[in-house]
Image 1 (cartoon, rainbow, N blue to C red):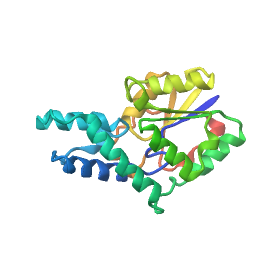
Image 2 (image 1 turned 45 degrees about the horizontal axis):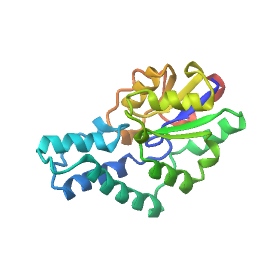
Image 3 (image 1 turned 135 degrees about the vertical axis):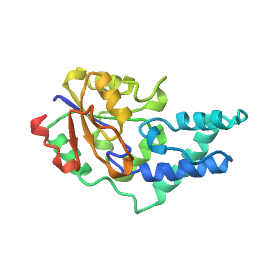
Image 4 (image 1 turned 180 degrees about the vertical axis):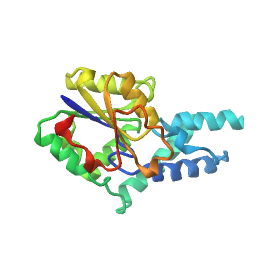
Length: 213
């Protein structure tokens, strides 16, 4: 291993319950069906979910961007002001261990740039990452491998020398398609995720032994 790449939601911050709550609030606000299998969209951008909901309802006067903007502002407000939100147990320690070993790190998330920045600032994580990339800024999000391939290029490392930490099936698929090894964190709040394609599966970030990667 020459580089370590992190997903964010469900890996560094247990934000999936907040995302699900705000997505449901957004659908209800716009009069759309909120009885959706949100776990099927974990690791993907909100616009994909909103596009499907709009198409299903035939509400073509709406756009995914309208819903995404509303959801984005609501989520940012909760993220910045709710002191009950903390990093996932073991995340800070893992970042510190990798830093002490001088392993380059990248953050590759499907969340919007403002959300990523808010998380980095809230928990003081910015100092650990040599690259920060949002899938929203790319033509395709996970399971497309672009977000991981570009992150590896930014770090100057070959994909085969990179290890990815993920919690969602779409993210694992992206990592494997990028030619990387992947650790899957079994997060109970990430829904029923198929983690079988991962090279390792852990129930706690504290289980990750970076000397064995």
